[in-house]
Amino acid sequence: MALVDKIWAIAQTPGNEQGFTIDLNRMRMCTDEGFCVAYAATQNRHGYDDLRDVVLPHAQGANGSKIIGGWYNNGDNQYYFDSIKVYTTRAAAVTAAKMAEQIGIYDLRTQNYIPIMDAVTGSFNPSLPATRARSHSI
Image 1 (cartoon, rainbow, N blue to C red):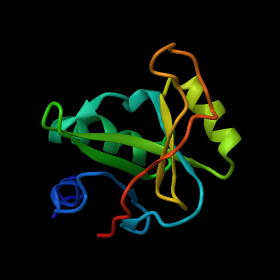
Image 2 (cartoon, rainbow, N blue to C red):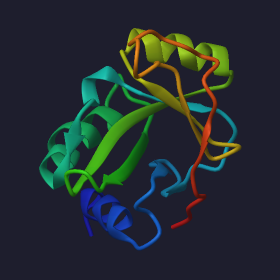
Image 3 (cartoon, rainbow, N blue to C red):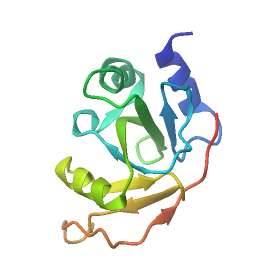
Image 4 (cartoon, rainbow, N blue to C red):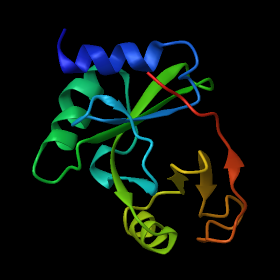
């Protein structure tokens, strides 16, 4: 089975709708500590074609980190995917997220999504509370 098909299957596995982060080097869920930030180059990518044509090549390329994150958006019934970089500190992740115009980061240790942009004002706010996400495994 091709790598893109393995990732697509993981995305569609019951229980992974809320999100998952895959280390392509080890082909397993990321369980290391750190904070995930999506690369700007792979923002707003959804569906099999974007996974195959944009996200996976970026993650495997010289500018990627060999990590892919994904989740299912109930609002538009689409699977979304990002090429991800993991930072060791929250501060570094917030800085990188701002530069990539991301609205949040993901804490691998606590399995929390951490919004950094106030949806009302549009300003970045690294002190916004985290929301709980489920832990996933392959």
